Image (cartoon, rainbow, N blue to C red; front, side, top):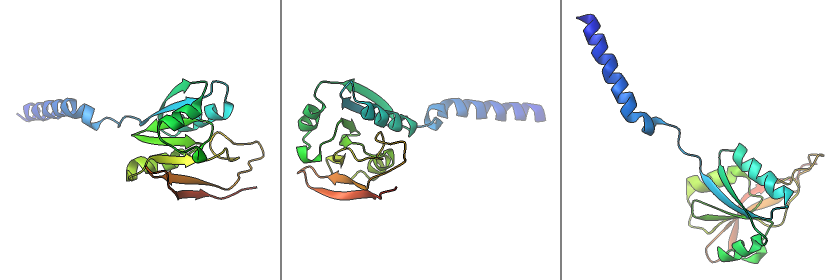
Length: 156
């Protein structure tokens, strides 16, 4: 009697686990699509940073990455060497993965995030000396106004 009860409980647990398996599986990685120059090493470094930090990245090597920034409505003043999209947001430049995860969690009303220029020490722009220039990650609104989303301090 006891072994039958154990069998039924085990079978029920197994059936429940099978039914819920997909729901209990790890969530899919957020997908980022990147438009970059085929010869840009720092852009590739940023892509590798994203992959190491939980993103699935689709890379598009294009002759004019800035064309995509313009197409997505981001003003030239926020420009860098590559443009990306994730979760309906535009990403411009060497935005740290930490801020992208935060953006996707908080879901602000915005066009996206930008790190204008190419600050030394930002993801993909690392140098052997370990130097990091101070830089800001900007939250850009749909009317192209920006506020500081995160500041990164300089390190010698």
